[in-house]
View (cartoon, rainbow, N blue to C red):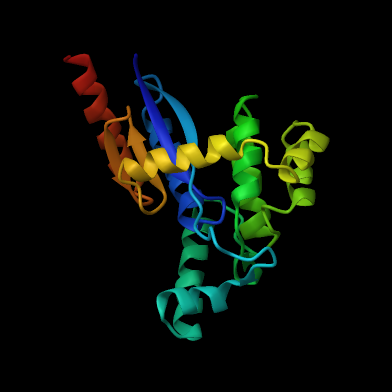
Length: 217
């Protein structure tokens, strides 16, 4: 069975990242027994300059994209529908605030050292889009860490410190230099970049192509 590495560049505040991961799961179900994938989450900040209190999501998106509130709300509802079709909880998506997620990425980096990063990523997607909680709030990070079997005290301590800051910044820089300017971004075997939350069948074809190339080397 072919082995492939996938680096998934993502932000817990990105709705398409949650959707993209669920579509990757669908692709991997199709490829079960055919390709063995090792997944590594990589950090990206949608709002690196956001103030700690954040701002209401529709207000933020209208200003960012230059659209009116009605149009932006409609586009958000379309994203919510796409997420819900995949079984994701996006019930709080319109109530969430735009937040900086650097603390979340630092705690996720720590979770990765214990092979719990995917579980914590998914819990933070649920917290943000389902419950409209701030995914970088130390109390939320503590709560979600406990939910996935991690040490809540440790998670909160990391969130309140600057631990893993260097690691997160280095990873962000590395993937920006590799051409990632938006998320989600899937890097296959460190060579091929797939941008956006592509349909599962597109990911299946791409993974098979890379596996075939590796087999022929």
